[in-house]
Amino acid sequence: MRIAVASDHAGFQYKREILRYLEKLGHKAVDFGTDSTTSVDYPVFVHPAAQAVADGACDRGIVLGGSGNGEAMAANRHLGVRCALCWTPETARLAREHNDANMISLGERLIELEEALEIVHVWLETPFEGGRHVRRVALIDEVD
Image (cartoon, rainbow, N blue to C red):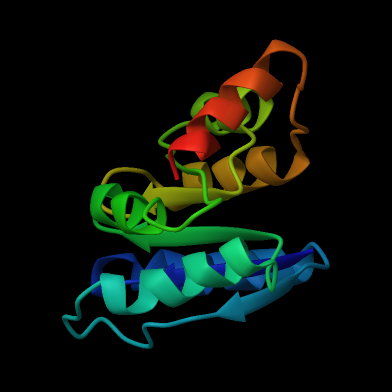
């Protein structure tokens, strides 16, 4: 799977670890930046990553920041992107099962690294449940 990954300065450390983790799992991680802990504006990096998911150049995407809130908001501006802010493996599981989330956002300042990696793992491994959720996801995308 090709996975777009982007962060701002506050998510940079976890981004590096997640890139390594994805490669270890056999995925192709595409790094959209940033490249250090120097303060940057997250939309500059999140928008290209989200667009890659929207265009189909990447199958899924992961964005990171201090809280992950702004990154999720920026990603969700792109047609066809459903980015869920996740803070536990359970939120990641439900985001996939019920919402067919093709992106997730993580807050480095709010969760431990081990938890972040588990969230990524659960999100990657959980299939979309379909059924009644298909209609609801279609309604989300209809607004776009």
